[in-house]
Length: 258
Image (cartoon, rainbow, N blue to C red; front, top):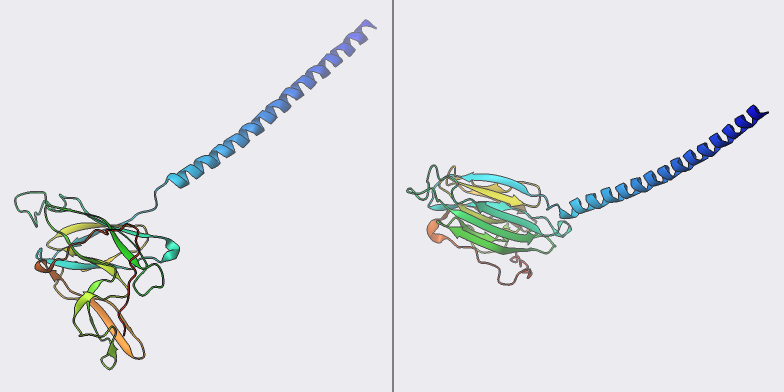
C-alpha cells in the first residue's frame, strides 16, 4: 500500500514538474516571438534608414579631349523630364590631372581645376520644366569651360534644302539654337574631364581628334527642316559660365518661331 502511495505521489510530482516545464516553455516561446517581432521591426527600421540615408546613384563618365589647347570642343546631352525630378550634371577636373604631360602649364603639374555644377530639366522642345541652372562654378590655374547653355550653342543648316530653315535666319549662324540638347564646350589640348550625373546614359563629346564639326540632331517637317551641328570654338571667343543669380528660379526656354 505504501509503495502504491509513493508511486502516486511520484506521478503527481512528475505531472506538476511537467506543468512547470510546459509553462516555462510557453513563456520562452512567447519571449522568442516577441524578440522575433522586435528584430523584424529593427530590420525594417535599418532598411528604411539605409534607403533614406543612401545618396542618389551617380553615373560617372571620364572623357579625354585632345586637339588644341587653343580651342574649346562641344559636349552635349539631353536631360530627363519632370517624372525623373531634377537632373544634375557636374563637370569636374582635379587640378593635377594630365600633369605628367603638362599640356597647359609646362613648368608645373598644376594644370587646371574645374567644378561646374548644373541642375536642369528636360530639353528645349519638351513640354516639361525646361531649364538649366549654374549652381556652382570654380576654375583655377587655367580656363577650361565655355558656352554653357540649356539650348546647346551650335550652328544650324537646312536638312532639306527645299524647305525653310527652322527658326529662320542665315544658315551657319552661331547661337544657343539646339532645341533637343543642352551642353558646354571644354578646352582641348589633352585634358581629362569627369562627367557626374544622376541619370543613366553617356554624354556625347568631340574628342578633339580633328577640327571637323559634329552633327547633334536633325529633323524635318512639312514646311521646314533643320540640322544642328557644333564645331570647336577658338579660345579668344570664350564665354564663361555665369552663376544663376536666383537659385531654383525657373527660366523657361522660348524656341524661335519657324
